[in-house]
Structures are given as C-alpha cells and as structure tokens.
Image (cartoon, rainbow, N blue to C red):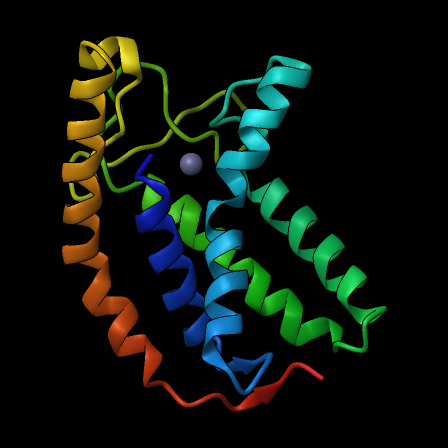
Amino acid sequence: MPTPIGHSLAGYAAAKLTRVRVSRDDRVLFLYAGLLGILPDLLGLVLGVVAHVPVHGFSHSLVALVLVSTLLAGGATRSGFRFWPILLLVAAAYGSHLFADLLRPEPTAGAGEQLLWPLHVGYGLVHNILPHVPDRAGAGGTLAWLRIVGGLGVREILVLGPVAFAAHFIPPRISAR
Ligand SMILES: [Zn+2]
C-alpha cells in the first residue's frame, strides 16, 4: 500500500473527476475525499484487530466498495445530500485506493488485494509505480522505516501531485444537494 499521502491525493483527484460539487470550497472536498482515500486501510486495520481478517481482504474488495458507498450515500441523504452524486463521489474516492494499491508488485506470494473477496485471490501489478510501505520490523528499525516512508511520500507527491493539481481545475457540474 502507498502512504496516506498518496491515497489522499488519489482520492481527491478521483473525486474531482466525478465533477460532483459538495461545497464551494474545494478544501472541503479535499478533506472528505482524502479521508475516503485512506478509509480502506483504516477499515482493514480495524477489521484486522477486531475480526483478524487480512488488511487487504474484505476492506479492499469490490463488495466493500459497493457497501461503503451505499451506506455513506444513504447516510448523507439525511443531511440533505442527493444519493446518486454522493454514491458516485464515495465510490470514486474509495475505488482510487483499491486502484492505487494495485500499482506495485506483491512483496509476498499469495498476498495482494482480494478485489473479488470472498474469493481468496490477491491482485497486484508487476510494475512498481507506488511501492509498498514495508512494516517496521522488515525495514530494520523505526528510523530506517521513517526514512523509507518519507522517501515513498516524496515519490507519491511527485507521481500523484501533478494529477491532483490538474484535477483541481476540472469544473464541477453535478450538485450534491
Ligand atoms: Zn490499502
């Protein structure tokens, strides 16, 4: 998985591509889409602790994408938002995470995103575009790990920063309210 920096940038770019307007202030969209961009990992970590399922299992599947998008869009209607624009927005930002996680080879055989959960098939690409964040033990200590994560964060900003910056100028067309 990329760092939260890469996932936030990808989430924002994907949300802008939907052309849904949630607020006149794009910082609001950046906040929500950024959080949605890291939500699969947060959900995966919580489910890992609570139910001992792999981080890249259910939370990184198309089933979760549909469920989370439907639940959040349904919840947003209670605050006066329209269902379909929010569904589109959430699906794009959440889906951007699943896509970004595919952009590197798997560090271990059999790992990878279980996009088709409950089938236990892991997916990942061969090209290392957004490299995997290693765990602390595998990196050889906290300092080495922080150095690696910092380097990956810079790489993600260089790869996804221009994409998010360009997406920023896409004018919204669909009102979420
Ligand atoms: Zn992930």
